[in-house]
Amino acid sequence: MPSQLVRDNLRTNKLPHIWCAGCSNGIAMRAISQAIENLGFDKKKVCIVSGIGCSSRTSGYMNYNTLHTTHGRAIAFATGVKLANPNLKVMVVTGDGDCSAIGGNHLIHAARRNIDITTIVFNNNIYGMTGGQFSPTTPMENYGTTAPYGNMEKPFDICNLAAAAGATYVARGTTYHVNPLVKLLEKAMIKKGFALVDVMSTCPTYYGRKNKKGTPAKMLKYFKDNTIDTKRVEKLSKEQLENKIIIGEFKNTDELEFTDKYLELIKGWEG
Amino acid sequence: MSAGKKLLITEDWCKGCGICVEFCPTNVLEIKNGIVTVVDIDKCIKCGLCELRCPDYAIYLEEIENES
Ligand SMILES: Cc1ncc(C[n+]2csc(CCOP(=O)(O)OP(=O)(O)O)c2C)c(N)n1
Ligand code: SF4
Ligand code: SF4
Ligand code: SF4
Image (cartoon, rainbow over all chains, first blue to last red; front, side, top):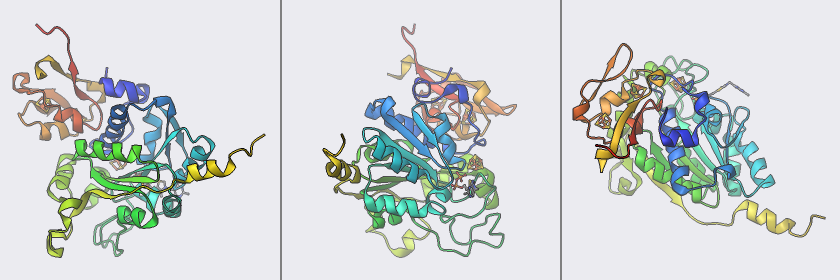
């Protein structure tokens, strides 16, 4: 029998999950459950929407309302769910590919609209499910099955992208810093508006193997040794920040939210 | 506080990734025959770091009542 947290939030009859040994998606999924538990949300009002990818399998395991959709379109489906049922706490769980490659347009426009959706990206810097192709967040010169000579492209910083597009809460955590991650997720979940948490996760099977990153534990320790909090960034030089992952809060503002504006508009229209 | 907690393992769910072994501060755990094994429970300080980072929910602390 698993822990109380797992029993109360996950579909235990679907476990153990499909993810590879040492894949940190499981750590991220546990952190989401912990945040939901801590906030005391009515679980009947939580809806998890995902696209396609290893990360997107999350919707199959979480024991709330769940919707497993098509690649890159989770945010579009979530927009429909939220507008049809504004009382739901709608969250998207997505991969770096799902969210910033094929789904990049949905991401920026949902952020621009500031619709009340919490988007949680499991960012493993690779397309895991399809065998290790490079994604928009693969660092330059890293290897993937489609980058046998090293990735030539400059990556997206999903946090800066979402913040610039108009998201009202943006943060980054890692699957090493689990307790701080839970706190960031909680803040994103209670934000009335478009919130995004970029969760650095590990894919030992493809990203790790292709880039000789070592054991699953070593990949997590990399986050411990190579992250800098947003609060410290200003004090450091460009050299000191090179190849570092910035974690913590990127943006936290309050603006009019789309669903509220829409409900105001249609007030009195029905019947 | 932590005296009322017990370390539990769901062997069927363990994939032997070694994360708990690496992060346990007191070397309580080892991988044997591909899955986690407790080698010295007396050293366990019930810190919960194994539970926090086990991606498969195969190791965890549970509160126990009326511990003698
Ligand atoms: C329309 C469409 N195009 C391509 C695919 C193939 N496909 C499935 S998952 C995936 C990428 C997965 O990468 P990511 O979103 O980063 O998730 P991960 O598996 O790494 O968690 C691709 C390209 C698909 N299923 N549907
Ligand atoms: S392929 Fe990578 S991302 Fe997918 S389950 Fe395996 S380790 Fe995780
Ligand atoms: S609770 Fe702490 S000390 Fe005990 S096995 Fe887990 S990590 Fe080790
Ligand atoms: S972290 Fe979990 S899955 Fe990995 S070896 Fe330990 S108990 Fe097994």
